[in-house]
Image 1 (cartoon, rainbow, N blue to C red):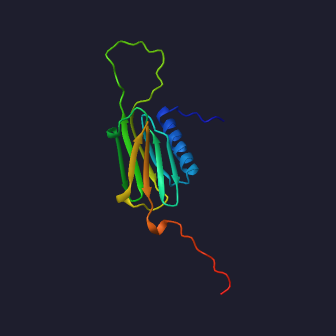
Image 2 (tube, rainbow, N blue to C red):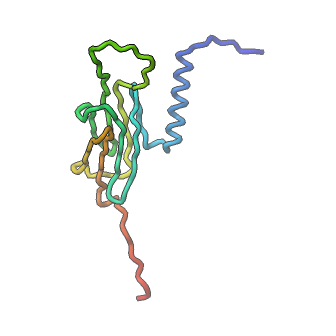
Image 3 (spheres, helix red, strand yellow):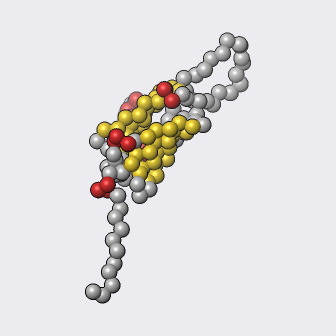
Length: 148
């Protein structure tokens, strides 16, 4: 026997979104990417050195004052809005692939950071945030003593 039930597109999209969120959480270990929202999403790279966590975000065509960065309880939030620049002359577009709109990204940082020393620089469309680690989370070298 077949079980016929009405097709509910909204429910199906909600289920698909839930499954995609679960896949992302599984891929990232359920802790690094906390949320991704917006009309477009800048690509993010997060790396770690002995002294700092470095976050790079690709945000071409934006001005630094259009980006907001905040840090609370080892959660870094980057949000902003890429606005479409309009010109007065009439143009007939054949294709538009440039993405515009607002975005918000939140990441749980893998180590404690010194909030007072966080630096953000924006150069050629790339936002670079350097978050110095707290002393207690920096790796410590332990020397091995020989026969005493």
